[in-house]
Amino acid sequence: MTKFTKLALTALLGLSIMTVSASADSAKGQKIYAKKLKKVCGMNGGEFAKKHTQDEWKKISEDKALKTEIKSICKDADVEKIKDKYIPDLSDFVVEFASDSGNVPSC
Image (cartoon, rainbow, N blue to C red; front, side, top):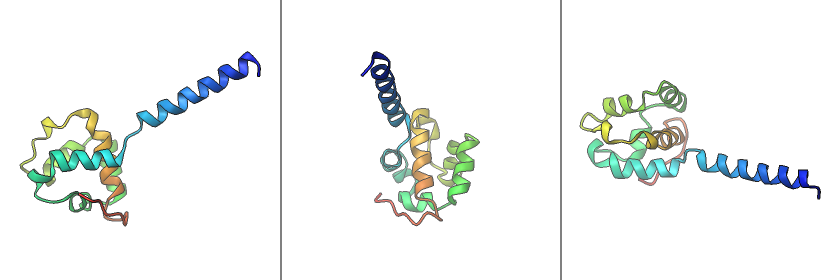
């Protein structure tokens, strides 16, 4: 292989690894919900996620209003304690287990 081909393949591999690690994870979001919100909300993750459809949750996430929505559903939740780095994972979690998804979380 030529040097250029090796370099191109290495760059492609590097980019593919970066995109996988940079993406949000619904399983991680489920763990965050169970740890930070389940007790305060008084409902399991499935009940929480089923408050909206997938499209509604996506719109809430796009509008960067997930913390506000969490506060409106869980009055006692201290959303300021939820780090911003957790929001993409929580967003993936609620979208994956929304009322119209047919999926049921284990928390």
